[in-house]
Image (cartoon, rainbow, N blue to C red):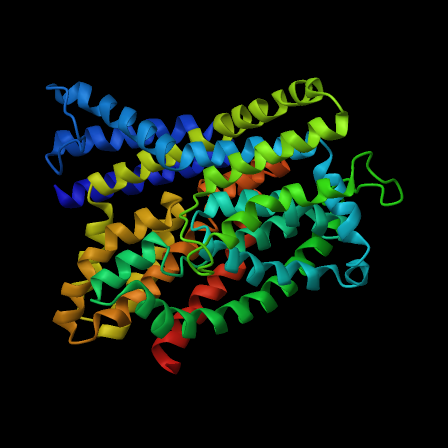
Length: 457
């Protein structure tokens, strides 16, 4: 039955790829495919339906499974992403984003001659923010609200700006990352030990290499798109026209980031655990007060405030629903034993430890692309690794580290990943276009990661 289940996964993946290429609604395609695979796993006896509160009927449990995915995603990440989307919309409505761009462009004018240099500098900046706020979609939206308008006004194309924002979330690193915590537990290290001793020495050289690749590849692709007559640039703001709001409004898009950094455990100034959603809501209150003071009337706040709810609704319809459906799809792959079969096949063909590790890194990179989730891909593979490493006579960390980093790299080139969907939804760029733009740099990047880990260190 294992082989049959694996073959069914391949067929379903192929059909989904064709349907997505033909621009079928991705939420509907992934939802139906995921529930179909869960149903097939039940029929074939591969695995039961994974629900916390069974209904008593296997048939109804399939739909209960979908319900639990919606509830868990909304309570975990969905609400946060919606609040960020609403805040971004409110910043645009009150012209705070315009004021940020207006004030930032002047000191950054030197980068107008070198816009692609400014573009790649966003990668390490975003990575530092990602360590304090370990949510790829959340950080992506924060950077779209702050860095994206600055980059496009410096002369960077829309898709190039989005590509480096996605690249800022390439590595799930730092003690606050769920993937880091899981990986550290697998190799009997504390998250901080794993981060300092293993992640940092590998991530820094790979990041520097990726900055160079993104600089070259985005420049090359933009020239090609321009030659083909494509409209690649966003409409720039009129820098000579000052927005009709106070200069202090420029700080409002940055306020959530400032709060998250100041109250981060990395800074350690305050014994406060501040989450992203709370930081956004506090910032929203401050923004409303600023609007009321500027408008000299509380009515101005209520006139502009519907933009926040509309932003939340737009993000729910386009981003949160796709994240949920993608998780149902990845759950279907897991229930049919797709990941376990790939790992078992790679470890049973008689290769050495390094060769098998390279194969598994490649598989997990591709799995994250298909599943749209670095966590789902790594959590599916991770528990199997210590046993495999013991059989091969190699340290578990030698297999775990490149797998864990490759999983988050694969996520950044998946058209159904939450971060890709979120930032593309706000910028109005097709997710498939951004996924394809990231494919070449990240394929080179994961190859470099493997070579650096296994043959240099």
